[in-house]
Figure 1 (cartoon, rainbow, N blue to C red):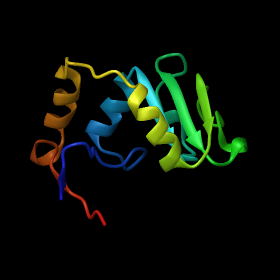
Figure 2 (tube, helix red, strand yellow):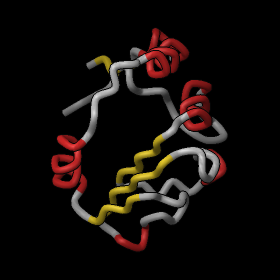
Figure 3 (cartoon, one colour):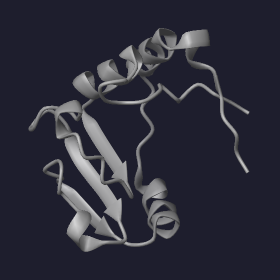
Length: 111
């Protein structure tokens, strides 16, 4: 399966598209992640943060989240997705995709 939404890794060995994504984003959604290198996340105050985790102690550990959601990832996302508003302007997303090898197309194994 080809996914145009994979930008590669973040951090010391991260990709340029991922660096740009983190340094320019206005919203950060962390799902079940305890990514330990906060220096590679958006600067504090740059992005609105939402985090989903089943472990309350993991919430807002690395980034000051505006919304912390405790729960199973699948169930929480199923409840959250219908509340999201679709943005018609895709310019920023498309610019990030073009930075990625093959225009943002990566091969991803999905079961």
